[in-house]
Image (tube, rainbow, N blue to C red):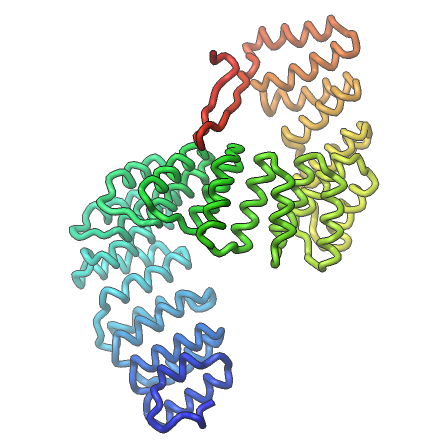
Length: 497
């Protein structure tokens, strides 16, 4: 590599052409023979190239052989790269402590880098010490330091302390405001995040995206879409993360028109259709009722992840297309894609829709025997649902009794529903006994038992169940629905006129 370059070749140019461990060693030798390893800027860029090529240990060993680093720039960059590597984050903090021992003074870059290491180590006590040192050397009002402190306190669920740092900052910029909004979002306080967002003197795409994601995370998709629409009206071009969040909100609401607009926007402006974005589109079309469009996107994908396969399998199962789900799973196995726990939930659900009990048992048992995964309560729940739907009520109840978990309300609900369909009043009573303790105010459970008795012509017992509901103050849950008009979701209840 180096023989084609003259003696005075710029090392920075060589580093840009470097793409292997051999090149790194050659450039290191080139630097050593010319004493260029004493240039702190060049050495920092050399270490950065090592990190980018996955050769961080080599770069760190070069730094450690330097007897006494004499420039804060080199220390800062070394702390930065150490904080990015899981096994070296504690060393980033130790190296930060060496700065002052070496007679140097931390600057406005030293504090953010070491605070990132503290965040990744969940070392809030270290973060507080760094905060105190920043105050002592006069950097508490630096916007970069302040932003890092807000992020550190927020990550430790000390958002009140982060807000105090934010309020004390004399100079602010959009990054600091974004950090405060993100801090509230990460702690689940979306209303406080919204208040900060609304008074921001300046917003960028990160500001909007953070709030959209925040509403999605707390399961308030209507407000997420409202913020996304405002973002559009303000002429802010959404990034991939905003698109993913908006598509997730559309999927939760079944907002097909807005989701199709987002899909067209992606295609119109030639945005990169990453695997994650395609996965979100598949999920959105599945939940919005257009399984054909979901499968079209799936088939046109050049690269697929396990999430892609699982989303498509679950989508077919969701639409009652069990055989299509199973065929997709067979294709996945032929492509040697390793299923995960969520994949098995999807495939067991597909077996349930088709009524393939033996095949369901095969996949359930293969989880541990073939793939080394111990079934979780969700997988047992799928098997109980499969057995119940197929009329194997005793087998379903036996599985509930011998599974290594306490059955939850969803599982006993499946038993109750199966008992209702297949007319087993005694099993329905046993299921309701459990459900009345887990969900004492859930009217639907009592209604299922009452309907079971009614279907069997046992009107006296059906009436007694209804009376029990009235005497216990259990009221029937009000039905609700939503409709999308001009890309806006309108909710209404059964009693609305």
